[in-house]
Length: 128
Image 1 (cartoon, one colour):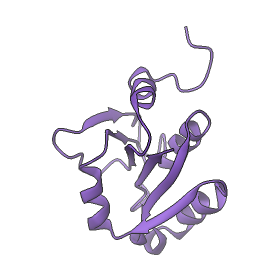
Image 2 (image 1 turned 180 degrees about the vertical axis):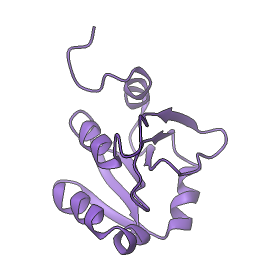
Image 3 (image 1 turned 90 degrees about the vertical axis):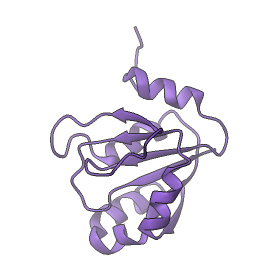
Image 4 (image 1 turned 90 degrees about the horizontal axis):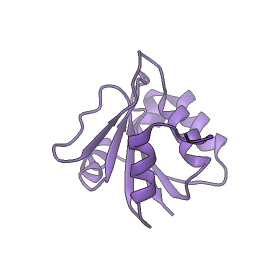
C-alpha cells in the first residue's frame, strides 16, 4: 500500500508514464474531453476536488515546467487566476485563448476531470 502522495491509481500511473514536455490537462467538471484522450475522472461532487487541489497534489511530486491557462480565466474567474499564478511562484504560467487551449488538449496524454465549477478553471501542465 502506498504511504502517501497521489493515491488515485490511474492518475499515479499517468504521471509516472509522462515524459519531458508531455501535456496533462486538468479540467473543470464541464470541459469536453477530446475523443481518444485518456480521461482520469476525479470529480466527486460539485466543487470537489478543484483544479487548484489537483495542481497542488501534482506539484508535490512532479516536475512542472509550465502551466498553461486561458485569458478567459483571468477575466471570468480572477480570484482563481490569482490563486494559481500567485500561489506557485516557482512555476512559469502562460496564457492562451480558450480555443487554442482546447486544440492543445488534443495533444494531451490525459485530461484529469475534477468537480470544479469555477468558469474557465482548466489548466494544462507541461512536464519538466
